[in-house]
Image (cartoon, rainbow, N blue to C red):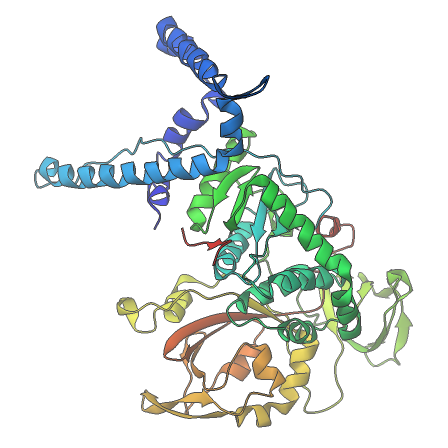
Length: 551
């Protein structure tokens, strides 16, 4: 864990930040608390600093260049140096503390350590988000402007952290993406344009999450394949990819990044505060907490609309009312869409949004494969049912957090002795696409053949003959991959829980081996829209390992 984040976990974590970085925001008067001499000393320091800033360091003819002007040009690099100095100091300090603690313990409990070394305050830059799409609450007091490349594995890691932050600070934060593909990311610019095209079909976040899971293996075929998998219109998507407007957007973001002095990804600006990544979740959380405090909010309290903006909230449940959806007609004008619904044993009737189906039940919205019902004070879902007996029902994923015991079984299959690697990303599977693919389950199962490794007396399963398989390619598998675990269950010749997991309505966690190395990915099932909400509610969405820009 980053040393800063160790300090942040201390109960008094906010005290040194307040003293060192937020002096002007703290609720005390300096002269009153520390005496007039302290106040005069501070004024003297400020005066000396102003004189230093105005020092002329070069003249060009009649023009002078001050030290302040030079420092302004290299403010990010100076902060990086300050962080390196802080790291050196903290490492030395920690060694000194570790040396002293045993001798002072005298056989009892070790003394409490209060960490007071101030962390360098990042420079604050003005990042104009304009009317670009954002993820989270458009009215949030804290905005995270993220400069990344979809072909960066470090950005893929940071994306998972951002997803968790959106849950932890639901309603308090919004994430605004900016495209900054490195020149050696050959697919980076087209990947960014592809996310823009997915956004035109209202699926930017699910598509972006899917691209990040394929950061290591991305190629020219990835973009169309992912669009098909997520149920996007292939023709519309392909035409958009050929439109130079998408590339122009990426170029504009890249120019902005260069003008800010950025040279690598990921970089996150927390209300403009420069945070160079990737960083652990608690590092970003520290600066988010600071900003919330500065703006008069309590970081420990839940936002009033947290449930609305939390990604891991429960999805709309399937209705148990005596209704059957037999067909839909979806119009570009939602109020003109219709649903063919049978109520109890009556003949099917045609209904439009706003029509009453039963006492206390109103048709709210019509989608291609389902309808949303307003039932008293909550929403329920009525799904289009197939008449074919082999029809595979795939429910939407409920992404609520698993309990700790289940997570331990997933992440520590052999107990504390071995912990699985973190997932590389979350890949969204389109509901309609997955249902279609699973009609051929018998053929798909034939692609699993016994491998030489044995667990619980059974052979693990290796994938063979999948080079031309749309299903396995979409799930990110390659020829020869050995599937090891699905959720908290081993996969072997005696059992393969992949199929049940994909139709469970829960997050699917899969671990597999590729070229002797472990890989892990998660799948969720979504419909075309990333969140189920009114258009008015979605208004906001419409509107040091790092990747350096060098070989």
